[in-house]
Amino acid sequence: MAINPEDNKEAWLKAISEAGGMVTVVAQKLDLDRKTVAKYRDSIEWIKEAFDEADFKTTDLAQMCLQKKVSENWKAAAWWLERKGKDRGFGREVKFEGKIETTGQVVLYFPDDGREAKAEE
Image (cartoon, rainbow, N blue to C red):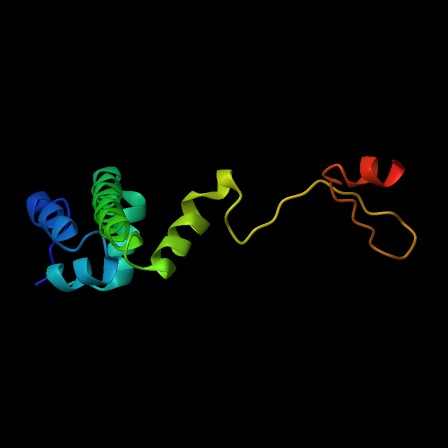
């Protein structure tokens, strides 16, 4: 039996919380199609807030679990630094300032880190 959100708010809130915000699991708990749950999540503010809260809590739990593993596992540490250590130079994305000249070639100008000054000496 499908549960309409307006008919049973408590059942919706419980399902969302227990499912950790996973739409498919919420749909199973409420006997609804996942597309219906996603539609309600996107259109009813209190449902969206419940999903956001569940997502926040699940992220906190994942972070706690990963923080424990970081001291034991270099892959977990690398994963953490790639996502949270970007301000310290870690991560997959490399940012630099550059320009493209219209010579038919791409020319990248990287900071010289003092190399230019050494070459002049």
